[in-house]
Image (cartoon, rainbow, N blue to C red; front, side, top):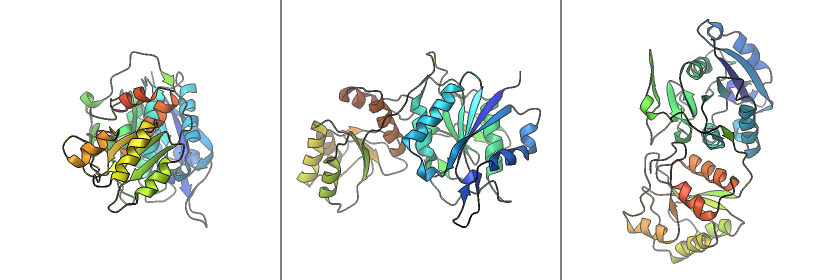
Length: 336
């Protein structure tokens, strides 16, 4: 029996056309453009329906509310389709992929997110191949997770990061292998895929929580961090050096972190390095963070750590449970 997919268009570069103000998503353009792609009506390809978000958005404008809309669309249509493909702008694609990975609990169908660096409206573009391959992957392979497909790379949603603003290979997963070798043949790495869940699918709605990301740099003013932590903050993603190190010769910095932790702020240590795993035991500059109540983000991307913390806070867990779950994999986002 022929499979059927739901394609959800959110906007982004892939559905943009030139305007006097620069490229902007155009309602209805993608629907007409897809009809003109002969590969999508090939007998070996699945049937599909297209659902377009209104209004279409540039992904730089995406919010938690938009993630809730996307997750609800998938949940409402979960029993009607064999898989889902989402067209999305590249700037925040890694955040959306991470957020949906946590929100769509016990996912047993593929959710493939894709986009392009050059709009589909341009003669020379990378959108066409990304669309065809994403639809093929969603229909032909048992993917029980949210993934990103971009320029011959199939990546776990919670492991992906945007690594280039100018190359077609815009995304990579520096701390985790690609899920497939995509070339003349598509070779799925089955051992890396998330197993099919045994429990029932569930969609979690996110609620707004004050979470900040703070990137360390030499000579930063602790007073700036104090001002951030003086807000009604629930969580902080601390982007540290190397394998999770930070200055340990500034008592005010360490005292600020310790007081915030004691007051219930969940502080997660993620590395600024694309390829890294936080280990606060190896250096004295890491151990002082550990002593100040900072927890390890291991090899999570800052994007995944932020979205995971937002998800766990939305679930209403107690602080100690959130700290525990932040350090254990829920959907392949970290190597513990």
